[in-house]
Image (tube, rainbow, N blue to C red; front, side, top):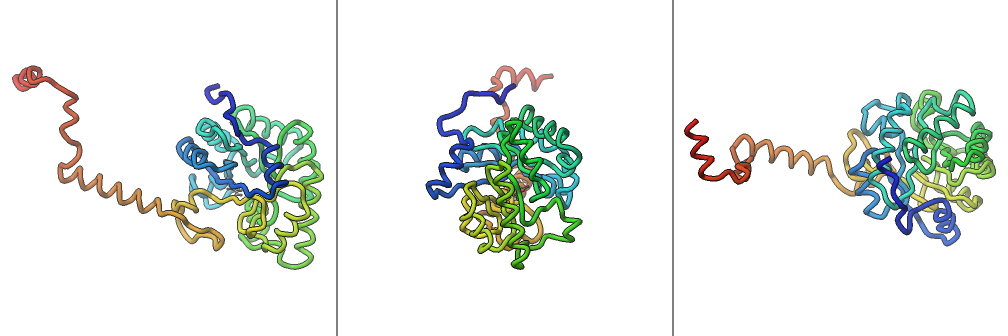
Length: 286
Ligand code: KIV
């Protein structure tokens, strides 16, 4: 397959993530769903690229992550993998692809690795996923867990709310994190949990925490690329800091091109493609 190429020196695999935690070195992770953004993100030095099921909101406009299919993530993953040389590529397991049986979940995760080129998979859930995580890890599939706000539970939760605010919830969350670590997950996403709770989890675990809306103490920070660069619509989550306004840059470029077409400023003479005077005069006599 076209994406199979020798690894570059410094390619990020699990040992690099472990070493960074041991050394207290912060890492960064961003989402990407296609070849050009993967290239930009990888070349910018980001350590991990998540082919997130946020593709449902960001790319397909579904409104949430529930409808995202395995084919959509696999296809995005193939493109991302082709555009990535150094970062670790992690594929989200979509809703419904790890819920029916362990065997089917393994099959789906293997598909993401074999055809998508993913180097790890991510799935949502706490203690209810412990057996599954053990099984996946036993089959040589590196797993990132995801607790706190789990967007695939949006209908059950009734919205996107901060998790782990009460002492009971926080205790559950910390226990879940430990259980997932014991099950073999190599990292855990903590989404929308109080920074104090995330700090406890980060301190108590040997594996890395990947924070999104969970404070600065997490070992790794993750964001949806399109939020970071201003390419999403509607109100941004409070924890997002927008570093660029790419939508505006695109709109201005499109308006300028459109106006140049209408005024005749584009295209220009270069599109004669070097036609000779001789051929020109022949053309004119046709
Ligand atoms: O799908 C996604 O982008 C995610 C991140 C928000 C962690 O799960």
